[in-house]
Length: 282
Ligand code: SIN
Image 1: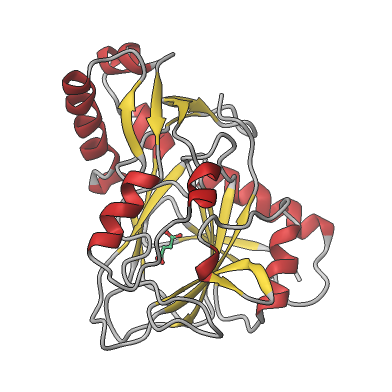
Image 2: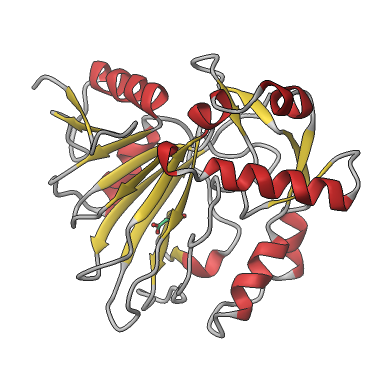
């Protein structure tokens, strides 16, 4: 089968056809998929049937898989799968508001993941879309003065503050243990990172996890970050993914950020995510 790449909704995201996450996958198809991912940032495979084991195996073609800090959301027999399920399943805790803020996955770790693969298992009749923003395009569109201000600077990323804010609106959300908190101390990353595979520059701050700027006082940092957060989500950089059951969306965390959107919680939304390890942002 030949791989074909089609733009989605006149946006930066693309649909890839001719590749199946189930069964044996040819090395040249994985290479084509990776090329599409790093060129476009968001790649969608649509209308394929595959199970959790096949999801994991397919994801492993792109690197080692990470295990999320909050173990309560991991499938007990397959911890590579983060179950973003508002009802919980097979002993996982329900997650009501997972990812419903702009973020790049796990940017609060010293080596944030290169990519994430999200499989739609069950979706509400409306809402629950995911928005993706292209951080290379956002960087390119900054004025020269702002580029000079942020190039070479480092921002602070932290999970704990975001987690506690989410927990305040979700009584079911389990506390992070002292051991889990010790896994995720705040870290500094360049505000502008260079994509290791394409050499493109991308803005690397996000509203979800970026809490300050190294060497800048809090008020000045807050004002600059708020301005950048607003810029990052300008509609000209954003693709809205309207999920269909069995969609697999693969995004590059090094050059995009995303936010889930709200939906009526009387309906079930169950999404399974694998997370592919990355490197130290530079
Ligand atoms: C995520 O933030 O990884 C999940 C986004 C979603 O559930 O739409």
